[in-house]
Length: 81
Image (tube, rainbow, N blue to C red):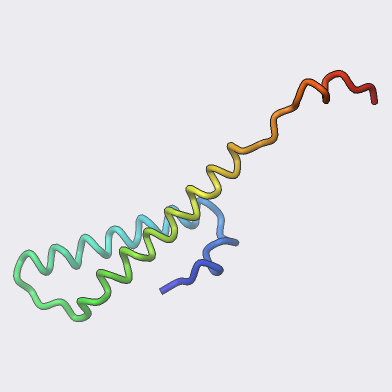
């Protein structure tokens, strides 16, 4: 399981790829369970879900941080450099 501090320096593209990989692994585990097969590590489902949530949270934080650019005020426009 990857920690949050390890995810933050990663690029958006890398995080999206990891999310895709984790979703595929989660689908495989769910399919095995649905077919009646034995799952080697049932706790892995929880770990995958939490890791996906962490990565989506970091992407959302970045999205919100990009949207919160300071708007120029009227006083800034009237100042002479």
